[in-house]
Amino acid sequence: MSTYASLLAPPAVAAPIPGREADMVVNNAGAYTFSLGHNDRLLRFLVLGADGATYYATKEGHFRQAYANVEAAIYALGTAAVELIVDVSEKGRAPKQDPAIFALALCAARGDAETRAAALVALPRVCRIPTHLFSFLTDYKSLGGKTGGRAMKRALQKWYMDKEPRDLAYALVKYRQRGGWTHRDVLRLCKPAAHGTPHGDLFAWATGKPVNFSGRDDHMSIIAAYEKVQGESLYDADVAALIVNHNLPREALPDARLKSEQVWRALLHGGDGMPMTALFRTLNRMTAAGVFASEAAAVATAKRITDDEQLRRARIHPIQALSTYRTYAKGSGERGSLSWTPNDILVAALERAFPLCFGSVEPTGKRFYVGLDVSGSMTMGEVAGVPGLTPREASAALALLWSKTEPSCIVKGFTANGSHWADRYHTALADLTEDFRSGTLHSVQERVRDMDFGATQPALIVEDALKNRILVDVFVVLTDNEVNAGEHPAKVLAQYRREVNPSAKLVVVGMTATEFTLADPNDAGMLDMVGFDAAAPAAIAAFVR
Image 1 (cartoon, helix red, strand yellow):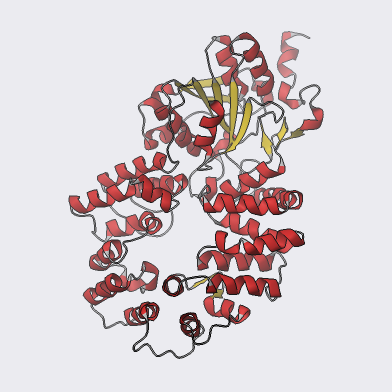
Image 2 (image 1 turned 90 degrees about the horizontal axis):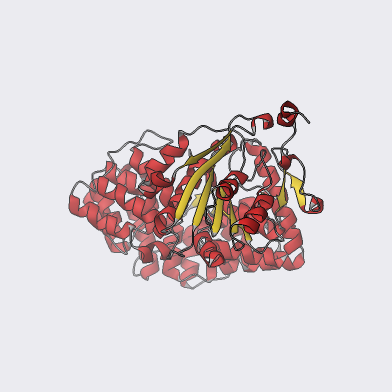
């Protein structure tokens, strides 16, 4: 074959690795990769969701592919699928509850008898607040589930009756409706028997029956305070007093009240204090209202934001911290007209909170080589439905974690210049090590956003270490696994092990909810992880050690 003809030959990834044909599948880019097992496919969906379009699929196409994978996983795993859903939800491993709720509804509606029963038992563990419950019922009905069945009625009755009266009262005034469902709808559906009990009082109020508030217990005082705060004649000071005395949440107030600095201060400090999730969500609105005009107020709130114990208890996910940081620092939201002047103290606190949300990540002392996929496909779509957060920018935030934690960490961006496979020899490997070592969340995301991009060639980082005899203990590849150029990474890693470091490992961090991976499932020295699984850094550290 002439030199010119060799340039036109298809890349190695256009065919499976000899002898591994049965283990490999064609990805969305037309090249061969390994296929994930059912457990890992389900996990990717639970953590990353399938909210938006990708480079290779429309929003609808992306979801349908993920849905087919989740459904197949539930059929194959049975009750083990329910256990995984519960684990991801309870440990706060995912940025949003929606995928877990949908998957649980799918188990309850489409699983076998044992899986359906397990899903209903798990209902209060996954759907911990009424918003989750309403979403579950919406998904369950859309999937063909029958809400009038006896098992479902018993599960819904238990959901309400197992709550302490005061906690239930708080939930009734905070989460009143979603997706066309209200508490009145659900209670009429399941008909819990609670007449003459504190629960019965609350159910009567929720279903629109007359209730006498005089001389009632503490749980009804929350309801009375909610009724009172709806009055238009109250002064802001009166509203603030009701918030402080009865621990009323923001959602219990009329929208007109949420323009007052006095009201927002009461929400922030009154009662049990504003919950951490609410604090992250409303930091911008409180700033716009002037709550943090004094340095002392900003410092006190920054201390809460960077309290790792509070972050852990509230299940604040790294994506939530990252999304809040991006939006707050910008001074305006993706939607709506609200704008604010970011408080520098709070911006710095939000940046510090991001790595804390992963828990305690201790350095391994190993030699890391982190490869960022900066190809064209990584510039499309949204990670976990966060507006504007592409897989490329999300991977930069993750890479920053290792760059700041590990003493020996190379970071490089890889791609192949040009989108056609014939351009595979025109490769691009950008050294980002110094950018990440001294960078911030904002600066590293800006750095990768401005890079050139082309085809996906992840083997480049291993080839670089092989060519330059760089000692590496673990290669970490952050990618959408849509490889379409170069050699199979598994083959190059085998050569690197023979010639440089026989103990070298490879971790593939998937940034989209596809079924593909570069990691060879038969190689104990390779690991597939889900991008932005909150448990991923600790799991990777254990694997590396």
